Image 1 (cartoon, rainbow, N blue to C red):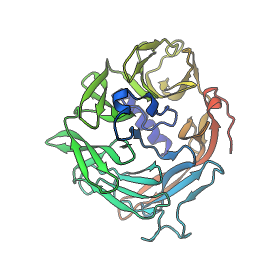
Image 2: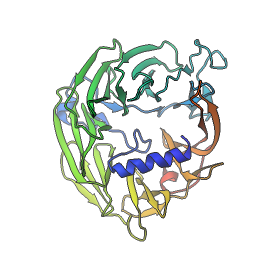
Image 3: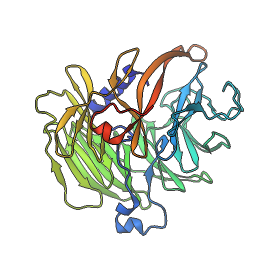
Image 4: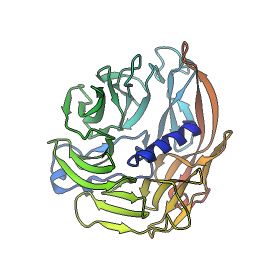
Length: 392
């Protein structure tokens, strides 16, 4: 993603004041052990929100080439080798290439799950764009199977959850001038679908998972809220409501929420129990026009904020002390806050540097910028301490 687009997405997300970055590598995953008793007793596995990486092996991403098609790449944590998953050594333009994913006008995202990948074509709510669909394949891109194809007006705008057997996707559609959303449960072996409707109408997204419940974010008017939605019986459990601007992320067995006005961070246990508030000095000595909680980990909290027209990462330690992070992703168009792409065991995969080249789209679609990264591993303790101890 080119830096200018990153800034635009960040800005629009903060203005909505309820958006958090999906699948942040810095967010602690909820463990099955932390699930409430009723969830642990269920025969199905606990849910997890899928990511582009496997913490034990590496990171998958899509690189666009001339013509608009994408090539599936894998970054190996052990060697930091970045290569296409193609086993034939071809130029990735033919139909038989396992690394090639044809572009049809809509966004494509890849997610890792156990021994397979799920490729999600997001769809677009406009004419002459690609159709929303889900494809399953092996880790090398082979043995592709289309699991689902949705309607022409449908689009998938949130990361899927997974319980080892079924995918859970938020599928949206524009109908009669309104956006309507439904939760689709998809059998990964047969493609059999089940649907649950009645979701809140605005700004809905999957924020995390806990046992057999999804943490869903929504917004309406000046209000932002987070609820737990049970995928088995469709029941709701309210977590929190706040006036915007406010943002939140899931961190293990809790939802952490940043109240912009005070700079305080509220921790709400997902299983119920006592709420705690961490007073921070985020707003002391600085005037942040916008602030968004984007991640929480053992080392503290990460906030992206804008001050005097510039965007930076701010690190808040467990005691509430804030520092501006100096680490950055640098390149030919300037630097921007350090891009954390994936999580390895004890480290984060980060974009140390970037370069930008133009690729040509088919027919009269024009040109787009393609950003390529130089990858490095950064130990977690060094990230939170703002030390440039990169492992190349």
